[in-house]
Image 1 (cartoon, one colour):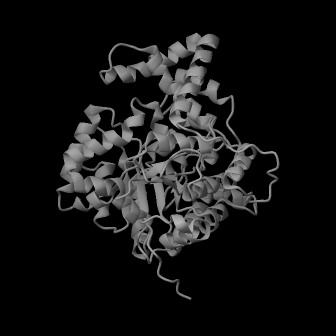
Image 2 (cartoon, rainbow, N blue to C red):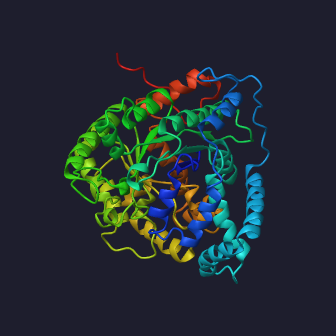
Image 3 (cartoon, rainbow, N blue to C red):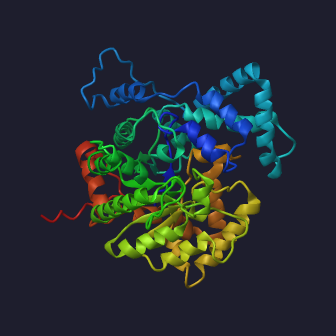
Length: 484
């Protein structure tokens, strides 16, 4: 069976309001310390390739231009032997420059990060090892989307299908990405098509089929401004015209999945419009068989108010499923409530598992779990073993999916061994069959692939028939003809 990373990212600093993200999310969420945030900001300020920088290179790889851009004199992208080696060389050069220009900042950031490594029994404080993680994470923000895709595929060569997720986060963070979501869709479609055709500039068998980001608050603001091209229109275009296979949403940015009320800077009027927008969105997803992945961990929220309101929790999604699941709404609750050493009986992970027995299309993924921390991963796997053997929650064995949340996990020790670590831990605790389901089968079911009646399967099949008919993967099913 193919291996699927159902939750990953290949956006760069131009696609993400990175300063707003680091300041409003990373700092209060203890993802990074102020010193690490300053170090990241110093590196990211150097910039990342924008839309106009990257699109001609992707056009050259495809051998044609989507919008008739001139290719005369354009140098094609050179073949890359090993993207990971290239990244390591870039990190070495960046670290040497930082140590020359601002050694105090490097030292301070390294000391903050080293504590995490010492906690894992990795020995005495090592400034180089500690700070390299922060520099590597920051350098990833400055790479092209194509370059990020190369590092992702090279880091996890066992994966056959990646579904990288775009995000739309600017509204709640008071910041704006330089590259619009529509521009990101165009670039990601080209990377996806290169993977379909076998034209990526490095050796790989994997395919890329992305999710588009959607922020209903951004849609509300766009409608208020009478914008012609709204975020929801972009989402529908990405699915129908650009080969995207799902939508990513992010409730801790200031909205409930359903039943919005005034909270934080969301007014009662905006909450009412949010409910209308979300109702339209869910009905469209049901009609078109569009999978949704949602951030479902009490983390990376734009405001403490949103955290305290529990916007990221499964409760709101259970309300959604009660209203729409009978009509077939495919939902993945990303991060599975988070992985913790100790859980209460009413913890999010158990709420999700109990709900999965009621809703046939409810799934979860394990992106961003700290598998390097044995004090956490041991109790967590014990908990899964217990869960899969309880009659009320055993169905979760067929709904839990492998995902990395790469490259957001690159700030942790041993991030490059996430796949092998999780695979081995899962197999040792739960057996080979459940591990195969976890690594791929469950995700293919969630995505609708292999089901000839599923419209998501049909759309992707038709996309291959149009652009790469000789490279259609075995995990897609020949679709049932559409009803006139």
